[in-house]
Amino acid sequence: MNRKPVHLAVYDTLADWETGHATAYLARAGYQIRTVGPTREPVTSVGGLRIQPDLALDDVRPEDSSLLILPGADLWDETGDLSPFARKARTFLDAGVPVAAICGATAGLAREGLLDDRDHTSAVSFYLAATGYGGGERYIDTDAVTDRGLITAGPTEPVAFAREIFRLLGVYEGEVLDAWFRLFHDSDAEAYAVLEKAGARQ
Image (cartoon, rainbow, N blue to C red):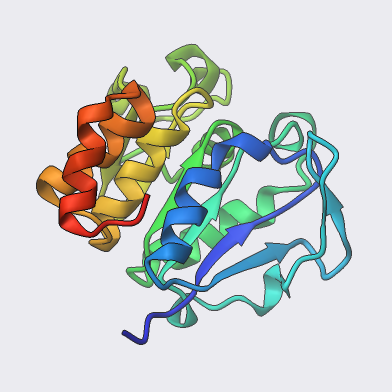
């Protein structure tokens, strides 16, 4: 199947652990993962991994993408350097292309006004409230939320974050999606048999 790539934002201090489940299983499902930095210059994750972006942010267009993933990073709260990524998320959503944001990236989207009229979650409600955004009444205290093409999750929920991405893109559905989540979130050994029977790669 000829799918458009998934674009993964990368920037200094990005949280390594938040997107690995999603990108690994999207790649196994046939999606090309393309990294997008502020520029083409290398960036360094919070874990010290050096990443050479495939593309600069200015070169990414919604019509060429299946999804934009925004991981957390210390820089979301320390500077305004990552606000261009939140503005790009608005461009994607306006074009009908989904966006998935986890941890600090949710605060960046809150500052951009993208959570004011969508159900959403994050690390905790008062974390987003500190941004001064107008969407507090739409905050849901749960592992991950999808609303109108936007996925949000907190930093301790990379598996639920991936689950919502798979559901949105149709990578896994029904009992297979449930089994994938139970295997990686709950270490439920019985879920493995469901995935194996369905032919889903673990």
